[in-house]
Image (cartoon, rainbow over all chains, first blue to last red; front, side):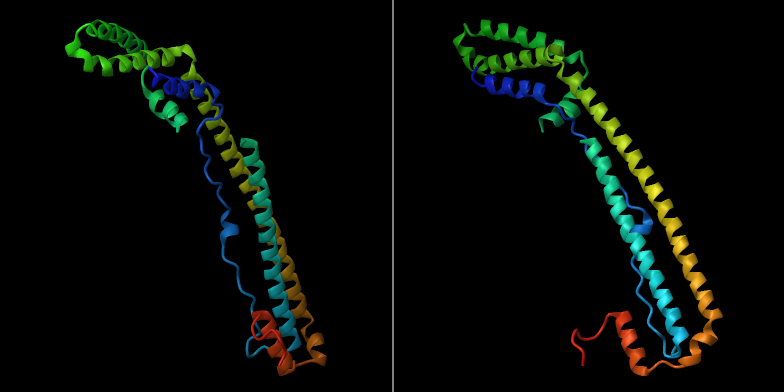
Length: 89
Length: 154
């Protein structure tokens, strides 16, 4: 009969249970954010004029701004998903 | 672990099992009580009595004394709904983010194209004073682009 005590305690503990065992899936990340970063482009052997250099700088600055956009995208993604996750708690 | 047992194991057993278990457990308990008067059946009684009592208690409990199953299944259903809503919200947030990013990237590329065209337009003026940049400047520039070389200057 002594064995019944832990059994009853175990059963009654269910009454105090408030959460259901549901594990949400890890949120997906947009494909744009997971694409690998592109390297900056150096001047080629035949590019020696100032206009070539400015063109090259423009090309590399463009890459920077695109990467900056992706970086901000990651931050936004994280903040959005965090808010959604906190709403689940 | 207990929640898992409640929701995924006990929750699948049909409701009519519990009154049967409770009735069967109680009946068995009385039968073992009668068997207790026979010393040769002592070992059966020793094992059977607590087991039958436990079955009786479990039967009564799960049949609805506390309504644990209903509460748990309701909580599970609500949790699943919340997770589904969160999943939808996550997808919507991703779509919105992708739209914003695509718009920004388009603008960046557009502006870059504009600058490129402007440089082509101004090429003669730009190259007038510097038709060929110094080799050292060219090397140093490429080193900066590649982020290569030593940390200290030669």
